[in-house]
Length: 299
Image: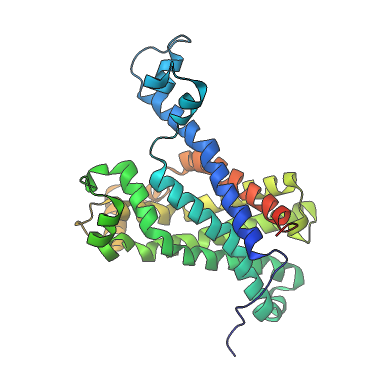
């Protein structure tokens, strides 16, 4: 018998979309300006002082009204916003759906295999893994975002629609490695979060966790997810970073990396990721876990 897909959990679909979408928007509003300020300060070659700080941060808008100065901290939101908000809606809103499907169809198997308590945790983690695998549909947006950040010459003045029409399936380059990265990464994110709530706080109904409990659980999930996914993330990024016409296989990237840089290169950038990506993931995941149950009271 095929699994039942038409399932309804404790929250409505609308609550999940609103809660996860709001977390993605809030993440952009909070962290994009911080990222812009950091980059502008790092790229400034002149000696910084209290009097010159405003002109360094706001540049030509330093003397403009407050509203315009704040808006000047949101350059290049296009690809980042499209990808990030869509990703957060899918990831945080989709995982509960997959969890509902697994619970409805395979709860007995999980309970018999792992026991009642661990089976519940494994269902959360497995739902996260399935969500991560499905996230491959957003790969074109991710690829465009990465190229815009580190290889802008690949665009050669072309717009988004033209790139989609001309490149087609090229934008899905590295899809296998993306799925291989997302499966364990999302398994670790949702699994570690559930373990933290259950074993550290004794919370059995995860939807009723307090904000502080969600926050601590999100830290555990984020650290586990980023660390577990780091090697495959390095490979995926190098595949996507190439020019559109330059096709590079994942195995070629792995072979060259191990030969020229050694195995430790698979974890390149792990510390910066934990310091930069970690807080964003903790912020958005904490917010989503808190907002989805809140929205479910009204929609």
